[in-house]
Length: 157
Image (cartoon, rainbow, N blue to C red; front, top):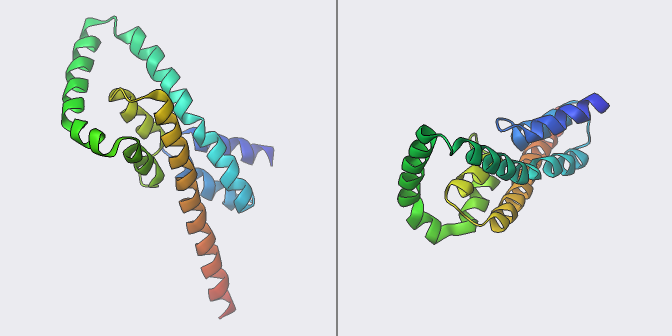
């Protein structure tokens, strides 16, 4: 069972799967749904700090290269100008909602990256990502739980 827990933790940390893949996998391999929820949320919540450390370290390293610096400044300036009105309007609630909705390309990695690019507060971003991960985990867990309940009901018919 240790192997399943390690794979579940790994899936929770991966940008592609995050909670959307980790919770269903955990449940499919026999980890009880409440345990799967808390376990996956814990590991997915670690993504925010890991992403900030990763982005800051590599950005400082690569920013010394003129090509990267020019490209980064051009892309980030355009992105910041384009989304500035939305950031002003929605702020951390926007980051929270973006992370909380368990769709492809949304989640802790993308939310943290977006906040980092926009230069938002690290502390506020980490809180928004944490609450988004908690909500996303609840949504995925409820969907799996409802599916299980429906299948049990159908089998009884």
